[in-house]
Structure formats: C-alpha cells, structure tokens
Image 1 (cartoon, rainbow, N blue to C red):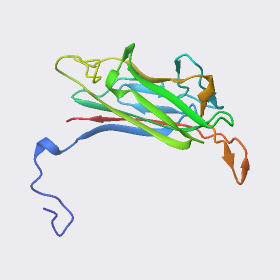
Image 2: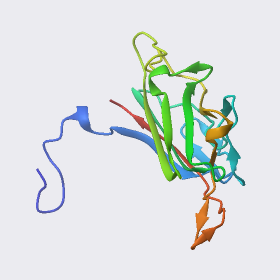
Image 3: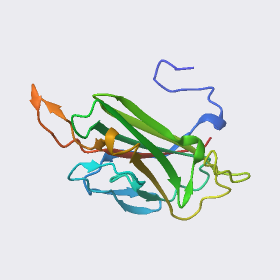
Length: 188
C-alpha cells in the first residue's frame, strides 16, 4: 500500500532489497566501484573481425565478485554486429563462459543477409545447489569469477564484424559503436 505521505506498507521482507548491486556502462576503460572493490571495465577502441576459430569478444570479459547473499548474477553485454564485407549472407556463433566453463545452453547464433544490428546478450547465473555448466549454475561464488563471450564466423564466406557499423549517413562508412557491459546482483 502506498500511503498519502508516500510511504509504503505491507511489503514482505522477502521482496525488499532484491537488487543488491547493479551497473551498466560503456566499455571505455572506466573504473567502477563495487561491494568487492574496483573493477576496470574493458576499453574497446576498434572493430573486431570474426575468424574461423573462436576468439574472445573484445569488451565482453569482466572479473566480478557479487555481494554476500547474492542468489543470481545477471551478466549483460550489448554490442553492434555488422557484415564484414559485401558478402550476401553472414553467420556467427557466440559462446558464454563462467571462468573456463562454457555455459552450453547459452549458445547463440546470429545470421542474416546484410546483417546490421545491436545485439543484447543477457544470462542469469544462479548461485547455490549443484553446479551445472549447461545452465551456468555455480555452487558458490565468494571470490572473483571471469565472465566473457567468444565468437567465430561460420566460415570466411559468411564474415561478421562487431563494434562498428557498416553503413552510416547514407553511405558505406564504418563508425565505432562501443559495446556496453553490466552486472545485476539479485538476492532472489
């Protein structure tokens, strides 16, 4: 109930303080203060071309320790994905990792003709219980874990680039689009 003076009554303690910590910033090398100390965000200054082998997605790696009592950490990464050349079809595969373990069920594919889009990747990492690399569940999380993405093109005939546009202002003109990275630590 919202009272006339703006106060709220009737909330259960189980739903208060659901968000324990949250940040979402451009990958520009900025330092973010968290409950476990400072994190320096990645600094992306140029495009990245996919190859036929998996490579770390620039800007996607972050080392993080959540606050005590965190039950879920939501990883967020937003980035520009564009065609690499004038090829007609573009295909890329993306993986997500918690430390060295791939979260198998998070595998993502981007494909299309003349692909040009802002990609939003988000994945919840549950804490507690039995660890499961398929879903990304971890048994506990009390020290730094590194979260990151990797990608590859299907083959050189289906090339992809990230962090730059392909077209801009009515012409072929590649413009830097700095990715964004974030974390939400939840008590539920």
